[in-house]
Image (cartoon, rainbow, N blue to C red; front, side):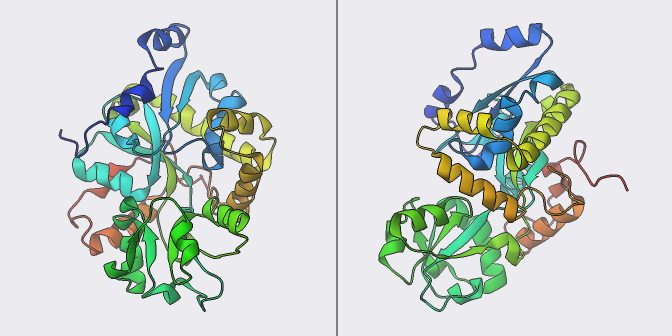
Length: 332
């Protein structure tokens, strides 16, 4: 199998702490080691994983989980595909489908965010009341976003590539030009813009406007799924409990772990993010949607959208991107 992206030198440092000696001890004591790579620095959007670790939910299910935080340039799917880690975060549904298209031996085994927290952010005094009103406006987008949710925006709203401006995860260009909009996460950029610039922006959650993708998926290698299905199931169940507790219970221990891993994180930022995750039903869509659940119907909707725009061939076996072995609709 040939993967499209080669390892960066910095990835070696990411997994350096996971030496063979550290792996053998937990296995010998009966625990299964799972190195779990996240897609960004520690933050509330990973709160369920930290909660499950801090509260012992992983340990009580026979797992020794090591959370390895990501950052710019870290390719989590490749870390999983090459065995550098056992599991990792899939940021959005395009990632899982890209893996299926490449023939990579990795699948999504759970989706801990039923709604992708991706938003578009606009200035409040430009007559922009809906996403459709952004047609023709410059929009700051990262390279990854151009090949992801931008595809859906073009299909639904008729946006064109001439609107794209380079986004380097800095809101200064947005603040300096009122016509400009930018991408962001519901739980992050709107807060920092309001806090630092005293500006309450217009925020449009793509998921509430029909964007069908999952987020915060757990990716696992086919090898792990085949060899240790009980461990994968235990990880999914523990993480689901972690998310429920993080958003609705005492999250102090998990927040402390997040702040330790990411010293730039503040408790105020974590607190407002938790409120937005909970109030916007990001993790749980409704009482009948179990935490972590995925369905064939949702995946089909997403694939149909993406393939209709030429992102994937319509003949792609998109079901290779995920498995419902560990999650699915609850029993009636």
